[in-house]
Image (tube, rainbow, N blue to C red; front, side, top):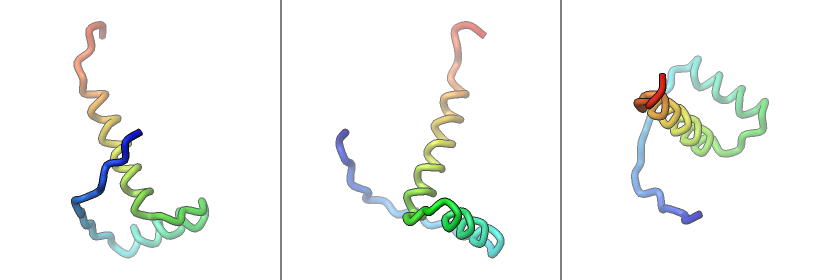
Amino acid sequence: MKKLPREYKVSILLNESEIKTLDRFCEKYGVSNKSRLIRETLMRAILKKMDSDQPTLFD
């Protein structure tokens, strides 16, 4: 698999409750790279939504 360089930065803001939840999750499941977790989770949700939006031949 070809590695693509990451050239674009995206910033998000979280409220106190959201960051505490993220921190608890990372601690519980041993996540050491929050950026990777957020990136992969976001892309998975986007791709799933795009896939479900595709027209199907047989419904």
